[in-house]
Amino acid sequence: MLTRLLLLFTVIVWGWTFVATKICLDFVNPVELLGLRLLLGLPVLFAVIVFKRVRFDFTRGEWARVLIGAAVITSHFLIQISGMQYTTATNTGWIISVTPLVMAALSFVFLKERLGRFQYAGIAVATCGILLLVSRGHLASFGWLKSTGDWLVLISAHTWAIYTVVTRDISRKKDPLAVTFAMLVPALVVTLCYIMFISDWSRIAQMSPRAVWALLFLAIPGMALGQWFWQVGVAKIGAARAGIYLYLEPVATTVLAIPLLHEPFGLPTALGGGLVLAGVWLGQRQKTG
Image 1: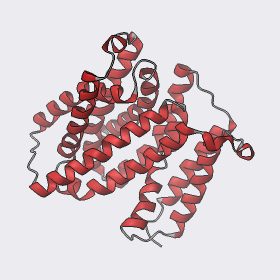
Image 2: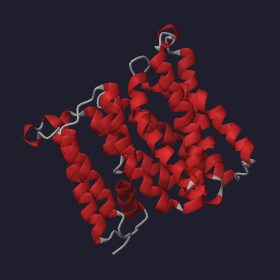
Image 3: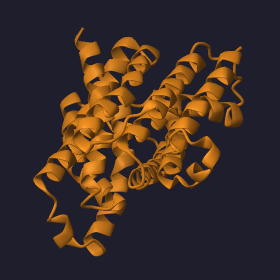
Image 4: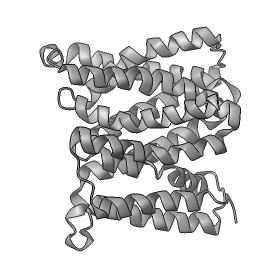
């Protein structure tokens, strides 16, 4: 019961991070937001690692893989946050939920893993859902082709899938918390250099109390505790069963974004989001056919 509560807490928090990100972007740019989030969150995550006595016993070859993963995850966060400057938290939550299907497609292309008929059908259904979300239901106008934010968020679903593929082997051999921490430290170094030498500190200091609370939420529950609780859940009930909880993430985003950010939720969003979830569910019914 406790494990399921931890997983439920985690996916709700991760859904709400998209709302918190939108709040913070009114005061800081994507690089600054990522740097501040890491600056506040990584010490807490390190405390968790020390508490659990996790070891950083990577070989030289594994450290090379860590650096590659660090480059990919840094790009992922910056692409996603940049996209969120131009789209809604609601759209972000629904579009990101297509990631499992993207992972399946990339595995087919790069790892030569076969796709079954359910996965082909799932990709087709989810693609229809994404087109509805991006176009806001106006497919015939073709104005949706200029939806920069939505396309960047969709690209970030691919970068996350690439990150998962790149780090798959090392995450199986080593503690995922140690792997995650090691890959985020280079991102912290790069973004802090930007903040120290390029950012306008007076502008950052003008963040409203609401934005400060949103930043703390992104850093501590969203990153440190979320990573910890998710790994506990996966270890207890397995990745497949834990992954079912991710279906709730876009729902959590929508439930908070509507009252807090006053984002619209019309029929195209409902239908598009429903098709995305249906496609993901369908695509996970069987791995190969």
